[in-house]
Image (cartoon, rainbow, N blue to C red; front, side, top):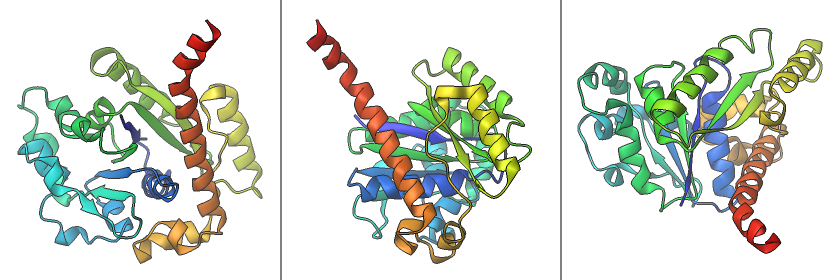
Amino acid sequence: MGKIIAVANQKGGVGKTTSSINLAASLAALEYRTLLVDADPQANATSGVGFDPKDIQTSIYECMVDGINIQDIILNTNILPHLDLIPSHIDLVGAEVEMINLPNREEKMKEALRPLADQYDFIIIDCSPSLGLITVNALTAAHSVIVPVQCEYFALEGLGKLLNTIKIIQSRLNEELEIEGILLTMYDVRLRLSNQVVEEVKLHFQQLVFDTIIPRNVKLSESPSFGIPVILHDAESKGSISYLNLAREIVEKNVEAAGEPEAAEDAA
Protein backbone atom coordinates (compact mmCIF):
# COMPACT_ATOMS: atom_id res chain seq x y z
CA MET A 1 0.00 0.00 0.00
CA GLY A 2 1.26 3.45 -0.94
CA LYS A 3 2.36 6.10 1.54
CA ILE A 4 0.31 9.33 1.55
CA ILE A 5 2.48 12.29 2.59
CA ALA A 6 1.11 15.82 3.09
CA VAL A 7 3.50 18.78 2.71
CA ALA A 8 2.15 21.41 5.08
CA ASN A 9 2.95 24.67 6.83
CA GLN A 10 0.46 27.50 7.31
CA LYS A 11 3.30 30.00 6.81
CA GLY A 12 3.61 31.04 3.17
CA GLY A 13 6.81 31.19 1.15
CA VAL A 14 8.60 28.31 2.89
CA GLY A 15 8.93 26.07 -0.19
CA LYS A 16 5.87 23.81 0.17
CA THR A 17 4.94 23.68 -3.50
CA THR A 18 8.58 23.58 -4.66
CA SER A 19 9.15 20.67 -2.29
CA SER A 20 5.95 18.86 -3.30
CA ILE A 21 6.70 19.08 -7.03
CA ASN A 22 10.37 18.18 -6.80
CA LEU A 23 10.00 15.44 -4.19
CA ALA A 24 7.25 13.81 -6.29
CA ALA A 25 9.37 14.14 -9.45
CA SER A 26 12.44 12.71 -7.69
CA LEU A 27 10.47 9.72 -6.40
CA ALA A 28 9.15 9.17 -9.94
CA ALA A 29 12.68 9.46 -11.34
CA LEU A 30 13.69 6.70 -8.90
CA GLU A 31 10.92 4.64 -10.57
CA TYR A 32 8.40 4.76 -7.74
CA ARG A 33 4.79 5.17 -8.89
CA THR A 34 4.01 8.65 -7.62
CA LEU A 35 0.85 10.78 -7.52
CA LEU A 36 1.10 14.53 -6.89
CA VAL A 37 -2.11 15.98 -5.41
CA ASP A 38 -2.55 19.75 -5.72
CA ALA A 39 -4.69 20.79 -2.73
CA ASP A 40 -3.93 24.51 -3.01
CA PRO A 41 -6.40 26.86 -4.80
CA GLN A 42 -3.41 28.73 -6.30
CA ALA A 43 -2.79 25.56 -8.37
CA ASN A 44 0.96 26.16 -8.56
CA ALA A 45 1.75 22.44 -8.36
CA THR A 46 -0.58 21.92 -11.34
CA SER A 47 1.24 24.53 -13.45
CA GLY A 48 4.60 23.35 -12.09
CA VAL A 49 4.25 20.02 -13.90
CA GLY A 50 3.10 21.50 -17.18
CA PHE A 51 -0.68 22.02 -16.97
CA ASP A 52 -2.51 25.34 -17.34
CA PRO A 53 -5.00 25.59 -14.44
CA LYS A 54 -7.35 27.56 -16.74
CA ASP A 55 -7.73 24.42 -18.88
CA ILE A 56 -8.61 22.19 -15.91
CA GLN A 57 -12.28 21.21 -16.07
CA THR A 58 -12.40 18.79 -13.13
CA SER A 59 -10.16 18.99 -10.07
CA ILE A 60 -9.78 17.79 -6.49
CA TYR A 61 -12.54 20.34 -5.69
CA GLU A 62 -15.22 18.33 -7.55
CA CYS A 63 -14.07 15.12 -5.84
CA MET A 64 -14.45 16.63 -2.39
CA VAL A 65 -17.62 18.68 -2.90
CA ASP A 66 -19.55 16.77 -5.59
CA GLY A 67 -18.27 13.25 -5.02
CA ILE A 68 -16.77 12.88 -8.53
CA ASN A 69 -14.76 9.64 -8.90
CA ILE A 70 -11.12 10.60 -8.41
CA GLN A 71 -10.02 7.91 -10.88
CA ASP A 72 -11.61 10.02 -13.64
CA ILE A 73 -9.46 13.10 -13.03
CA ILE A 74 -5.97 11.57 -12.77
CA LEU A 75 -3.69 13.22 -15.34
CA ASN A 76 -0.54 11.63 -16.76
CA THR A 77 2.13 14.31 -16.65
CA ASN A 78 3.98 13.00 -19.75
CA ILE A 79 7.19 14.51 -18.37
CA LEU A 80 8.09 11.51 -16.19
CA PRO A 81 6.66 8.03 -16.81
CA HIS A 82 5.88 7.32 -13.15
CA LEU A 83 4.41 10.73 -12.22
CA ASP A 84 0.65 11.46 -12.24
CA LEU A 85 -1.31 14.51 -11.05
CA ILE A 86 -4.60 15.29 -9.34
CA PRO A 87 -5.00 18.96 -10.37
CA SER A 88 -6.36 21.93 -8.47
CA HIS A 89 -8.41 24.91 -9.55
CA ILE A 90 -9.27 28.35 -8.16
CA ASP A 91 -12.75 26.94 -7.31
CA LEU A 92 -11.11 25.17 -4.36
CA VAL A 93 -11.22 28.55 -2.55
CA GLY A 94 -14.97 28.10 -2.14
CA ALA A 95 -14.78 24.47 -1.05
CA GLU A 96 -14.44 25.26 2.66
CA VAL A 97 -17.72 27.21 2.66
CA GLU A 98 -19.55 24.60 0.56
CA MET A 99 -18.33 21.73 2.74
CA ILE A 100 -19.25 23.31 6.06
CA ASN A 101 -22.59 21.46 6.33
CA LEU A 102 -21.45 18.17 4.80
CA PRO A 103 -21.30 15.12 7.09
CA ASN A 104 -17.71 14.02 7.88
CA ARG A 105 -16.45 17.12 6.09
CA GLU A 106 -12.89 16.61 7.42
CA GLU A 107 -12.67 13.20 5.71
CA LYS A 108 -13.67 14.04 2.12
CA MET A 109 -10.10 13.94 0.80
CA LYS A 110 -9.41 10.72 2.71
CA GLU A 111 -12.49 9.10 1.12
CA ALA A 112 -11.22 10.17 -2.30
CA LEU A 113 -7.51 9.30 -1.94
CA ARG A 114 -7.30 6.16 0.17
CA PRO A 115 -8.65 3.87 -2.63
CA LEU A 116 -5.72 5.09 -4.79
CA ALA A 117 -3.09 3.99 -2.27
CA ASP A 118 -2.82 0.54 -3.88
CA GLN A 119 -2.03 2.09 -7.28
CA TYR A 120 0.91 4.21 -6.11
CA ASP A 121 4.02 3.85 -4.00
CA PHE A 122 3.81 7.48 -2.87
CA ILE A 123 1.06 10.12 -2.91
CA ILE A 124 2.33 13.65 -2.20
CA ILE A 125 -0.23 16.31 -1.22
CA ASP A 126 0.69 19.98 -1.70
CA CYS A 127 -1.29 21.89 0.96
CA SER A 128 -2.35 25.52 0.93
CA PRO A 129 -0.67 28.01 3.31
CA SER A 130 -3.40 27.87 5.95
CA LEU A 131 -4.79 25.61 8.66
CA GLY A 132 -8.27 25.66 7.15
CA LEU A 133 -10.60 22.80 6.26
CA ILE A 134 -8.72 21.78 3.10
CA THR A 135 -5.43 21.40 5.00
CA VAL A 136 -7.26 19.52 7.79
CA ASN A 137 -8.64 17.23 5.05
CA ALA A 138 -5.12 16.63 3.71
CA LEU A 139 -3.75 15.81 7.17
CA THR A 140 -6.69 13.49 7.84
CA ALA A 141 -6.04 11.68 4.54
CA ALA A 142 -2.27 11.41 5.03
CA HIS A 143 -0.17 8.77 6.73
CA SER A 144 2.50 11.39 7.49
CA VAL A 145 3.38 15.06 7.07
CA ILE A 146 6.50 16.87 5.90
CA VAL A 147 6.91 20.37 7.38
CA PRO A 148 9.11 22.68 5.26
CA VAL A 149 10.86 25.32 7.38
CA GLN A 150 12.65 28.28 5.81
CA CYS A 151 16.20 28.98 7.03
CA GLU A 152 15.34 32.57 7.98
CA TYR A 153 14.62 34.64 11.08
CA PHE A 154 10.91 33.82 11.42
CA ALA A 155 11.48 30.11 10.72
CA LEU A 156 9.95 28.83 13.94
CA GLU A 157 7.07 31.31 13.88
CA GLY A 158 3.83 29.38 13.72
CA LEU A 159 5.55 26.00 13.79
CA GLY A 160 4.21 25.33 17.28
CA LYS A 161 0.69 26.13 16.05
CA LEU A 162 1.04 23.65 13.18
CA LEU A 163 2.41 20.93 15.47
CA ASN A 164 -0.51 21.55 17.84
CA THR A 165 -2.95 21.18 14.92
CA ILE A 166 -1.24 17.89 13.99
CA LYS A 167 -1.69 16.66 17.59
CA ILE A 168 -5.40 17.55 17.50
CA ILE A 169 -5.85 15.70 14.20
CA GLN A 170 -3.94 12.70 15.60
CA SER A 171 -6.25 12.56 18.62
CA ARG A 172 -9.56 13.22 16.86
CA LEU A 173 -9.38 12.38 13.17
CA ASN A 174 -6.29 10.39 12.18
CA GLU A 175 -4.49 8.33 14.82
CA GLU A 176 -1.92 7.02 12.34
CA LEU A 177 -0.70 10.48 11.25
CA GLU A 178 3.03 10.86 11.90
CA ILE A 179 5.56 13.59 11.26
CA GLU A 180 7.64 12.31 8.35
CA GLY A 181 10.16 15.04 9.02
CA ILE A 182 10.96 18.74 9.22
CA LEU A 183 12.59 19.89 5.98
CA LEU A 184 14.94 22.89 6.11
CA THR A 185 14.63 24.94 2.90
CA MET A 186 16.16 28.03 1.26
CA TYR A 187 19.48 27.44 3.02
CA ASP A 188 22.29 29.85 2.19
CA VAL A 189 25.64 28.55 3.42
CA ARG A 190 27.11 32.08 3.29
CA LEU A 191 24.68 33.47 5.85
CA ARG A 192 25.39 33.05 9.54
CA LEU A 193 21.65 33.37 10.18
CA SER A 194 20.90 30.32 8.02
CA ASN A 195 23.39 28.27 10.02
CA GLN A 196 21.90 29.52 13.29
CA VAL A 197 18.39 28.50 12.19
CA VAL A 198 19.64 25.02 11.20
CA GLU A 199 21.28 24.61 14.62
CA GLU A 200 18.21 25.86 16.47
CA VAL A 201 15.75 23.63 14.59
CA LYS A 202 17.99 20.57 15.05
CA LEU A 203 18.37 21.38 18.75
CA HIS A 204 14.59 21.63 19.26
CA PHE A 205 13.43 18.78 17.01
CA GLN A 206 16.47 16.49 16.77
CA GLN A 207 15.52 13.21 15.03
CA LEU A 208 12.51 14.81 13.33
CA VAL A 209 14.77 16.94 11.08
CA PHE A 210 15.73 15.50 7.69
CA ASP A 211 19.46 15.14 7.05
CA THR A 212 18.87 16.67 3.59
CA ILE A 213 18.78 20.48 3.54
CA ILE A 214 17.42 22.29 0.47
CA PRO A 215 19.66 25.19 -0.62
CA ARG A 216 18.70 28.43 -2.29
CA ASN A 217 19.18 27.63 -5.97
CA VAL A 218 18.53 29.60 -9.17
CA LYS A 219 17.53 26.48 -11.11
CA LEU A 220 14.91 25.65 -8.48
CA SER A 221 13.42 29.12 -8.92
CA GLU A 222 13.53 28.93 -12.73
CA SER A 223 11.99 25.50 -13.32
CA PRO A 224 8.31 26.42 -12.54
CA SER A 225 8.34 28.98 -15.36
CA PHE A 226 9.09 26.10 -17.76
CA GLY A 227 6.38 23.90 -16.23
CA ILE A 228 8.85 21.18 -15.28
CA PRO A 229 10.52 19.94 -12.07
CA VAL A 230 14.14 20.95 -11.52
CA ILE A 231 15.38 17.42 -12.27
CA LEU A 232 14.28 17.95 -15.90
CA HIS A 233 15.47 21.56 -16.01
CA ASP A 234 19.00 20.89 -14.72
CA ALA A 235 19.64 17.44 -13.28
CA GLU A 236 23.08 18.43 -12.01
CA SER A 237 22.00 21.54 -10.11
CA LYS A 238 22.28 21.64 -6.32
CA GLY A 239 18.49 21.87 -6.05
CA SER A 240 17.94 18.75 -8.15
CA ILE A 241 20.56 16.73 -6.26
CA SER A 242 19.10 17.84 -2.90
CA TYR A 243 15.57 16.70 -3.76
CA LEU A 244 16.88 13.37 -5.08
CA ASN A 245 18.71 12.94 -1.77
CA LEU A 246 15.50 13.78 0.10
CA ALA A 247 13.57 11.20 -1.94
CA ARG A 248 16.22 8.56 -1.18
CA GLU A 249 16.13 9.48 2.53
CA ILE A 250 12.33 9.05 2.63
CA VAL A 251 12.46 5.76 0.72
CA GLU A 252 15.18 4.43 3.02
CA LYS A 253 13.26 5.47 6.13
CA ASN A 254 10.06 3.80 4.92
CA VAL A 255 11.80 0.63 3.80
CA GLU A 256 13.42 0.36 7.26
CA ALA A 257 10.05 0.96 8.94
CA ALA A 258 8.39 -1.69 6.78
CA GLY A 259 11.20 -4.13 7.54
CA GLU A 260 11.01 -3.81 11.35
CA PRO A 261 8.45 -6.60 11.94
CA GLU A 262 10.50 -9.03 9.83
CA ALA A 263 13.67 -8.05 11.68
CA ALA A 264 11.89 -8.64 15.00
CA GLU A 265 10.72 -12.09 13.84
CA ASP A 266 14.25 -12.99 12.72
CA ALA A 267 15.61 -11.93 16.10
CA ALA A 268 13.00 -14.07 17.84
